[in-house]
Image (cartoon, rainbow, N blue to C red; front, side, top):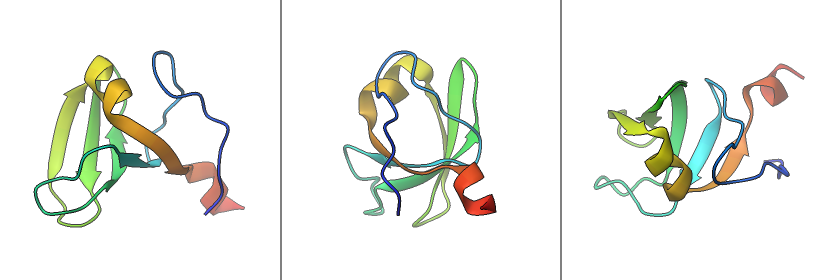
Amino acid sequence: MHSHNTPLGPGMKISVGDKVRMRKPHPCGGYEWEITRVGADIGMCCLTCGRRVMLPRSKFEKRVKNVLGRKEDEAR
């Protein structure tokens, strides 16, 4: 996948359909998530087990490790 120069932390740009890697694994063992909702809370779907969770944006920004892929990259 492509590496992106997306700043992590407060103010990071994230869009529905982006795929991210979190610092700690989900109980199913998966690290990779797809963003399903963006706002004050971030909705995510685990790409390993399909579980959907909501995190406050502040917690999401601390827990995200990197952005694996952007939705607009798939259209190219």
